[in-house]
Image (cartoon, rainbow, N blue to C red; front, side):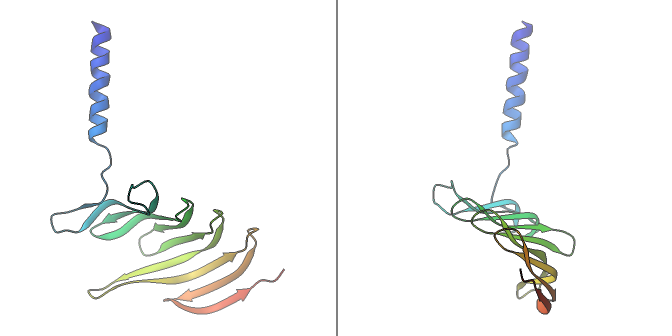
Length: 145
């Protein structure tokens, strides 16, 4: 009897957990994106292209982009006023990192570089450092071997 009760409880917990699984690509009653959104390279939805999170129709939390090969291409981590950006090559090595901003207006959404950016070669050696202000390059330093 106790064994049957334990099995029944496990079954209920499992079904309950399954019903709370994450749902993707949802919109609210106004048609505004919310929650996790995933786009794919292929129709069978096996090869992820972009995975990001929306709140009130705006990207927030984190966004990951992938090459068709499945390797990570970019990662965006959203903070209050800035976005931490990292770009990767096909081998999975980081080739650039820095900060960006997103401006929202009625007409457009503008993504632009902001602050320090660093670029790296295949051996992960820093090859340049740049500084941006409102998307405009204000200084750049190239490192030589």
